Image 1 (cartoon, rainbow over the protein chains, first blue to last red):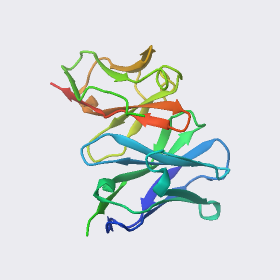
Image 2: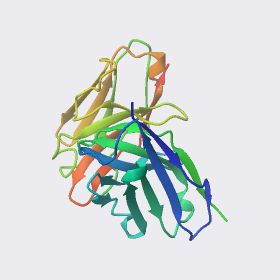
Image 3: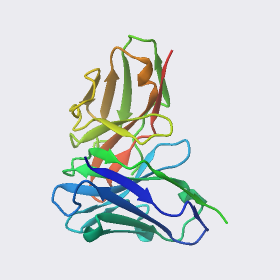
Image 4: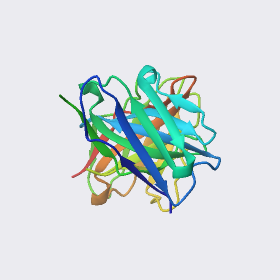
Length: 120
Length: 111
């Protein structure tokens, strides 16, 4: 059974870089068919798609975050990562990593989520 | 592109059926049959309950069903149960450079 687990700092200062890692256990992230994704949820609000990376390394980003965003993967460690630059309080949210099966917009596996607060 | 539009809340009594709408545009919901729905209990990660508009993953109750008409997708919960009280989120493929849109979420209350 594939499991996803987010890790990273829970507190980031304004203007700094938010970095999170998702570790995938029970499966490989380098096999075809899956888009490895980041999704966030602002407190008390809906979900927001951040972006995903395909097993080939191709990346797809939310246009509103694209200028500050990098998603990468380390297949040897079965991990993929998120880097969001120049953060503000508006980036405070619960961040989830998730798996999109076959690129058909079905996020079928999720991590438990990690809360990131942007504050001085 | 704006987020998809969902009602903030929907309520029903046990045993009743309720429907949650998810309004998009001809560029997203209206163009692709790639709408998914997620159930989220407080403090938990979302769970996929409908994909490709009307398909249920293995293990999801058949009380959940999805449909689409024009630019609006819908999730129906029949035989409402106390455990169905949760937030529900719709999601649609938007193509182009937008790719994925979510709705604002709907809180379902079982009276």
